[in-house]
Length: 150
Image (cartoon, rainbow, N blue to C red):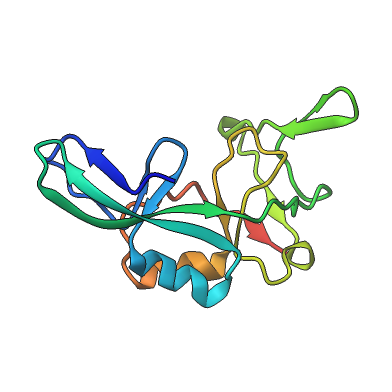
């Protein structure tokens, strides 16, 4: 794992949750909140410096380690596209108001995961974790819309 990262565009503030080339760069505050709900995450400290060499702060590269298909297929309206052999993936058409419904029984105690059938491998979070992050005023995670949990 790298231990140091050079950041450019000094004019921007480095936030609590940031994307660093398909990895998540997060603050300790973010990790502390997630770990209140689930410990199945991996993170590694990384010292960040600006391109001029000045310190930008201590952050962590975060990896979600839970791969979980928790989509309720009966209530989900997103488009499922079969991909041979015997596989498929979700390709939602958001302009048609297609949406996902997640099964709480499948989620169990998981609050942050990646669905193996999603076209984009972004982490998903439960409504409970989402509310905790909002309450803590965690900056910069993307609100991709609310999906029902049943």
